[in-house]
Image (cartoon, rainbow, N blue to C red; front, side, top):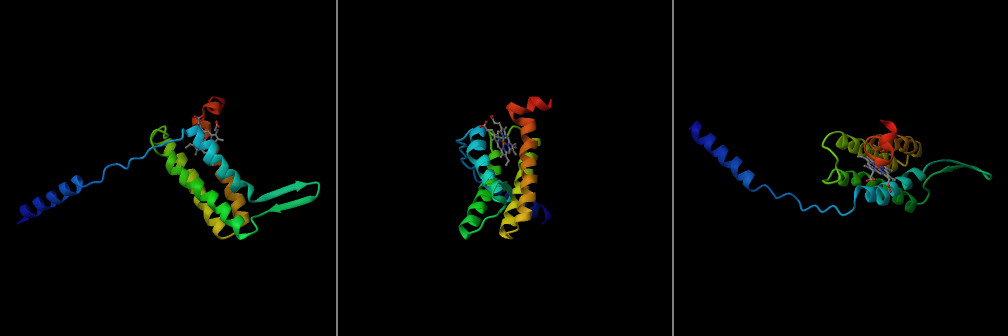
Length: 153
Ligand code: HEC
């Protein structure tokens, strides 16, 4: 009886393997450099620009999204940014399977915190998370960005 059960289990396992879906036909279009310039930087700038203090001749301005449309715009930017992390993990963009992935995960972690802060309309948290988010960009650039990694050797 036991043999039959094991045989049945093996059969099920084999059947499951055979029916595993093929790898999705991902087709990365933009090079990492372009993804950075056209997605990461633009979305991050919107997120960073939404809060903070600007001092001008006219006085001190506390920046904050005001209308519903402003809040949607900053949330859209944060969502685009965090999901772009998944694009960075795809071949051929991922430069290795270890440090690169961890750097992306750190960026996405701060992106998730940013979305939560936006949902709470907590501009103080948005500002603080923005600074931690910036650090995750720099951490990766110090190691992988050709233009600056040599400066840190
Ligand atoms: C997982 C690693 C990684 C993370 C995280 C990362 N970057 Fe990059 N970034 C790169 C690499 C690699 C390059 C260099 C691409 C090249 O020149 O081929 C780059 C280049 C750039 C550039 C220069 C693009 C150009 O036109 O030369 C900008 C701007 C940039 N990143 C913005 C950001 C911002 C903003 C963040 C954070 C919100 C970020 N990056 C997070 C890896 C990363």
